Image (tube, rainbow, N blue to C red; front, side, top):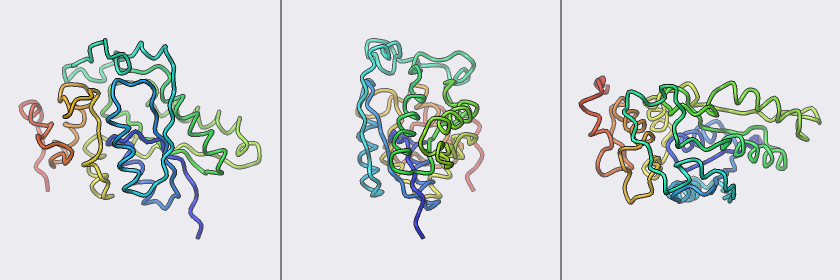
Length: 242
């Protein structure tokens, strides 16, 4: 039986790696795409390359140059990364790490690739439960984008359809960690930190959310020699791992 083709938007982080392994487990013939858009470090790109090679998934590495993205502290290294108090993460205010239109651009490129190779879907790893409050992670955005994509592609014009699959969108970080472990995802090679140091900073929102996921899942983060969850121990009430 021929497996349906799919394009996976792949950063090399915990969520996109879990989404990629989910697609592989579902039997999709995957082709991954990663992006260099001027972000302050390339650690995730290195992880994406390593993981794609390990999973034997073809990887397209796309370089973008949008000067205006420097409004984001994730791109402009001169800006200070926010160290938001954990209880206020995702509390309504869009953080300075938001990159304007990033997921729209990435998803559009994914659709372009999907339409060119006859892929049935684009797989993405957004999440709205434990997240920083980025507007381009919400389900309504992807529903609207799927409708637009199929109105303006060869696939849609010829009676086909390109689906947007977001398997993690309603999962907590702990549930994502558990799914990754169940799928045997190589999460020890993933990188989530906004900083580009040798080790995760443990202070940025991404580090804190990742730490929360592993702590609540009751497992240590294999990507770190020093567990990122240590600094959250006194803040989180974690159920015993069964």
